[in-house]
Length: 403
Image (cartoon, rainbow, N blue to C red):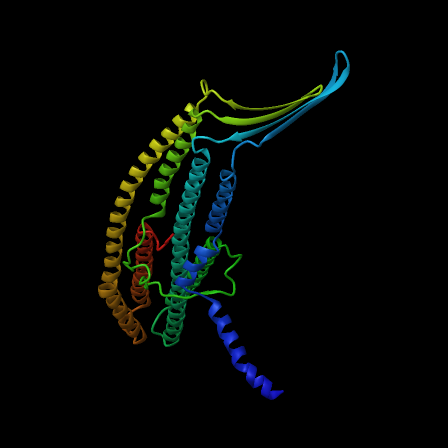
């Protein structure tokens, strides 16, 4: 029995390790889940399958079914007899109607596929944004908790100095007030953290993130910084495909100028005579020859071409703006990290040591710490701004969606 347990132990450990890995959401996990499980792309792909069903109808041999007619009845003349008449009509689609129907259906399917790819691009960007907001909320909460630790330490130091007769009661009260504000900031940060996690769960289509930890570094934008060539934006390709679809619809509508043909075969039985006749029925497209549908298709194609040109110009501006915004956001982060943060950290350490040594008062210490905390909060906000700018640039380039 023990031998069997040791044989199973590696499998058990692998399962535990896998479960532990699944308990963490990395940036790559968020992107993967957003593409495959998020509600918006899933629904968009379902719409593609719905549109694909139209191809079944487009491939049918004709738009009308053959018609079989039969008449029978008595004849009274010199004698009584029974007459019968049977006719069969077989409609034929001329002018390449079937091929043009298939072309319309296939163009519509491709357009919907591109719409689904664009929905995926937007959803992935939203999920990545929510992911970085969660990381930002975690860092803000950690910073708020650090503020509580520092405030409690200052309160203890103030109490010790009061007992030694170095400071008055109001300085202890000042320290207590700072502790209360720090604890309030923790509660506010925790509320923001819950809100950010809920938003990430909503975008990913998860009921909750409970039991899942969001792993990553707010400053890590390496995945978004990739400059790999990406295919054309799916929203632009969808507009191009809409032009193709409109032209295909116009081609199908123009076929209405071609007469429709029905082949007929009839059998008559009159008295003792059997009569077989063959014939044809041809429609004369004098009044309705698809002119309304052709006009609508042309108007739709013109509208799609205008929208495509406008969108291309907007995308070019979006790319330039996103690149400039990202560069400026990264510069803002670098300046804080290179200049402000080291100086503020040194000032805080010196002020804390000076207060413990009785060389400065609590008000000065709290003022300096407030400046340090403001700098660190600003640093976190600038990191989030840089991540948001990176997401916008990444999405503007196509978001890595390759369909």
